[in-house]
Amino acid sequence: MSRLSKTRQLTLGLRGVKNFFGKKPLCVSFEITYSCNARCQHCHLGGMIKDEKRASPEEFGLRARELGPVVAQISGGEPLLRKDLKDIIQAIYRPQRPPYIVITTNAALLDEKKYRELREAGVDEFSVSLDYPDERHDKFRGIPGLFRKIENLCLALKGEQDKGITLSCVVHRYNYQELIKLAQKAYEWEVNLNFSTYTWLRTKKKDYLIPPEELPGLEKMIRQIQEFRQAHNTIFTSDYVLKGMVEFFRHQGQPNCQAGVRFLVVNPDAQLSPCGLILKNYSNLRQLQAEFSAHNHCTACFTSIRANSEKPPWVLLKDNLRAI
Image (cartoon, rainbow, N blue to C red):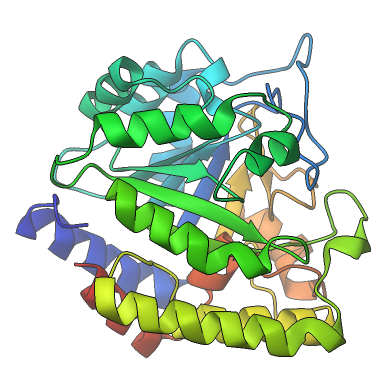
């Protein structure tokens, strides 16, 4: 967050307090397309969707004003497939005011020129998927050469201050032993790193869950991550989220989901859904909260958007101060 002016930091903080106590979302994910150029092993999306009903940039901008989130995450699918992505960003962006804009991307279509163009349009941060510290990432995401492409982009920007790139790793049974190597790679590339917990809701594949007998190994790895974070401060994931990750794998669930209250999704057609994993459509926030959130008993995820939006207020304050 260090590139943000003091004025914008203050307005983001005040918006966060207002939304937290006013039952409005801290984070809204604008899933602007379900089309994707990847075939990720942990995801139900992949391939191009013909005749997809898509809202205009102006409609997404209206949703952003209506919902007033602290963070607007522009995702998909793969958001860079939309040719009007720059217009969507500009429709959501407000100088010196919320929201903080994050693009979630696999980076296959993100080169230095596109990075600078979107940065200029208003993107605060690029959340770039990276699940392995080498070419195994290509197989997991279904895009040959993807690891090297991400590496080349990060190295091209190396030395620049406040570049706004965070590598995002989905933690699962087959990569948790690689987390410290990913942390070292992010430090080498001078970018940040965040961890998100695998969920089976997308694909029903429970074999990616870390089984009970391997949890001591995960806990050992997390201790290494905490030591690395203390030394280098390039890891975004807080102790609260790391602890919740272990508990999610231990119990294969996490109770008290606040989808629709702390976070929600705007679909490609600008209808609302409680999250990207439960695609029920609602026309407005009041309807979503009354018909879904008030009766929500889902426990099947602890993804990054949920984990970070559901932090207690004192944890939110502490973590955001550390980020600044």
